[in-house]
Length: 221
Image (cartoon, rainbow, N blue to C red; front, side):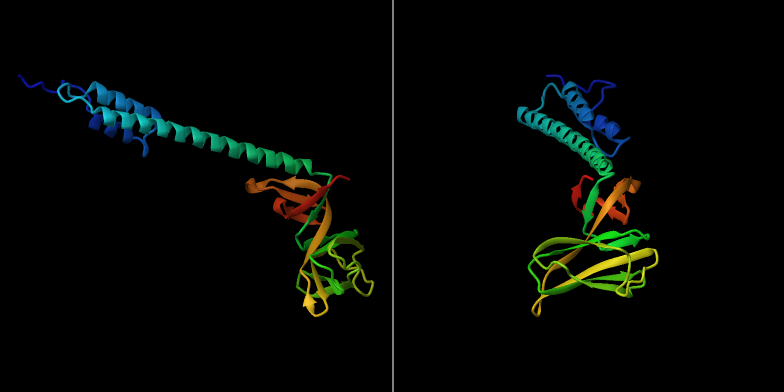
C-alpha cells in the first residue's frame, strides 16, 4: 500500500500550538478548542487519534472552561462586595459609632470616652496621654461592672485645666484585688464623612479618623 504523505501546506498540531502560544503566556479556552479541532483535521488517516486520549482532552477542555467561569464569578463577587462595603460606609455618615481605637483628636468640644471590662473590677482608672506620651489626665472608673461604659469628658485634666487641641491617647486599667481585669478603651463619635483613598474606607468622625474594621457598633442619631 502506498504511503500517504502529509498534506502540503497543512498546519500540524505542533505548529498551531506554537503559533497560539507565541503571543501570550497562557492558552485560553478558545485557543484550546481550536487546537483540538486542528488536531482532528490534520491527524494521520492511517493512525487516527486514540479515542481514550481524545476523551481525556475533552474532559480537560471542560475543566478549563469551568475554571474560567469560576474565576469570572469570583471576580464579579469581589467587585460587588467592594461596592457594597463602600455603600455601607457612606450610609454611616450622620450615625454614631463606637470604635476600639484608643487614639483621638481633641478640638475643644466634649468627647465621649468609654471602656469595656471583661469581668467586674473593684478599682481602675481611665488615663489620657498627649502626643509626646505624657500622662495629662487620670480619672477613676465610675462603673466597674462587666460590660461597656461611657462618660463625657470635657477636655480638662485632673486639675480642671482645659487641654490644648491636638492628638491624644486613651488608656484604661482595671483590677479585681491584685488581679488585672482585661479592659478595652472605646470612643463614641459622630461620623461626618468617609475617605476612600487607595481602595480603603476611612470613617471621618468628630474625634478622629478610624478604619472601618475598628467599628464595634453603630447607632442612629
